[in-house]
Length: 115
Length: 113
Image (cartoon, rainbow over all chains, first blue to last red; front, side, top):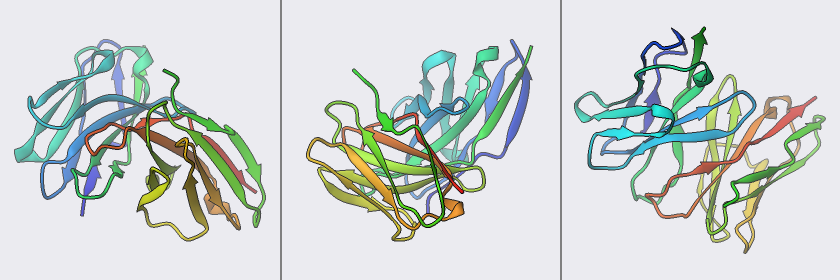
């Protein structure tokens, strides 16, 4: 069965510091992978996605993620965090064509940014 | 293009009542999915509709149901509300092909008293 693990429930970084949020997945084939961000009381905004091809994916707001098949990981990175990045981040797995169109979400990582 | 809209944004109901939530997808999108988000369970998939047909369903009781109209707008209904149904209900739309990204609405926050 598909699953997504985000091992870090909370992460605190200082503004200007680099950031890496971890995501590990379990799936029998190469899944579709996504990172979403959710600000308090809001819906989810797509940061980036990986379907195939180049394993380093660029997203919005200066985020990037790298797909590593050997480690079943899709970690999110940002070289310099801004205070406005404080939010909750969700990694998600989507199943390739198999009749299913649902996403499996990780439990989320809440990011706090110190001024 | 307008994004996914959900109405109402907030709802307060009492146990035993029923509730209907509405979702209007992005223009041209034919797939609508519903998710429940709670602090304890996180984001859980409820069901997905495409061209008025339920294409996939999560592990929720039959009290949770949905439908999709010919204009792709979708509604979900929860009958006989329980305290545990208090959650943020998120709707997402996509074009419907398997490689398409889902775009989420702001959600409807339901509080059951």
